[in-house]
Length: 132
Image (cartoon, rainbow, N blue to C red; front, top):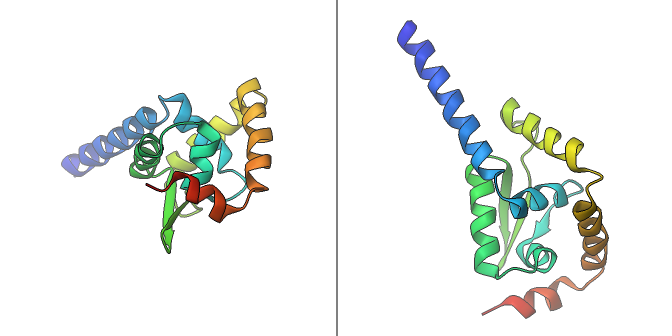
């Protein structure tokens, strides 16, 4: 019994540390906040962050490994969204905490405006720009 409790505590600690590491990069936090209103294609995230597609893909992989995001593939495009209601409580709490603390941050407000413009762009034109 004590062994099982210790294992659960260790798993919870490992999960918390994975989430904390994922949140230790400002670009990943910006991605999380940008996903609040719905899923985005990788190309849209690339446009928002202004980083190389390979760098953005690495950031998205870290967020997904931490359980903070979910992904789906449609044709040749990958879409990411925030973890759903079935995500562990610590994941949901982390997402809520990030959003509530940074909602009015000047960089986040700027990202929101930029994302509005990006969402008005043709997805196929935008993604064609970043294809190798």
